Image 1 (cartoon, rainbow, N blue to C red):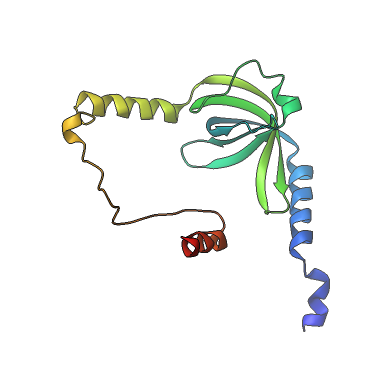
Image 2 (cartoon, rainbow, N blue to C red):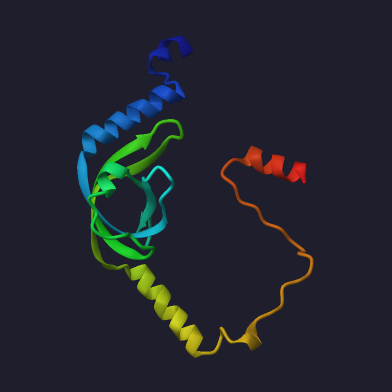
Length: 159
């Protein structure tokens, strides 16, 4: 039975390549509206960030040759409109957006809600010193989150 199905068996690499080609060919270039978060610019000059709305998010990259044409510095919480291509980063199997152009579209709704909540809590006095608890001299619990579980085990076994 398996021998009759071998032509439809994909390697992981072939699967990711096929999905990448499907995404790029079928979707083409799209316009996306979203709010920027996790913006970083490493030494390469490329921009990496997440675009999100109320219920979803997607990773984005804007390479140096494209971001040179942007006339503003993107900020966390800023609403933007981007023209982009959808692709799949084959080594990880993650789909992402490759941004070609970006324009500001105002302050993001999520950022506005956050600022409103912060102002409300501040007005209620919840940020006052009297409500703050001192940090314990020795933590009773520790949380660690990493993308690679094997690395997590290495770190804990090292220390």
